[in-house]
Image (cartoon, rainbow, N blue to C red):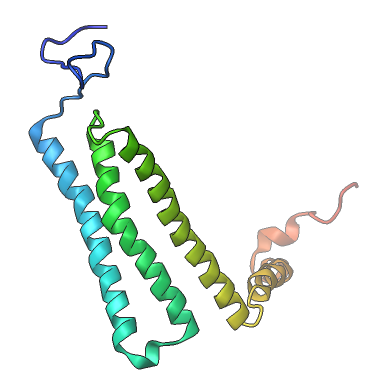
Length: 169
């Protein structure tokens, strides 16, 4: 492996520390803008949801309170997980310390679990409110499997010539 003269260790006092990855400035800035704009859009749109549900009294329903909870969890994703995750992805060296590293891992898993838990609760709420609406998605393929052979038999002449139902002659 070639040694580059401009390559530096993350921590120069330790010879065994990892090497800094040197990206071009334009790529570096573009990626930071891209990732942080995703976080900013996430924060902005979830703030709109929170304000809307708080402001309009007709939106104070149990389902919308679950959506409010999801919006708050996703707001935390945009405020905490995305910016610190961007730094972790973009920088080859972690300068925030080992305690913050452990804290960030726990906090990010906790916040992402909150978001996923809210999605599960919303899906259960939609299932119960729909009156067992899972029957329709299971029923449609069954009906389709009954109707398709009839459609093929009447409208596709090549289907009539096939001996699909005869296993042995």
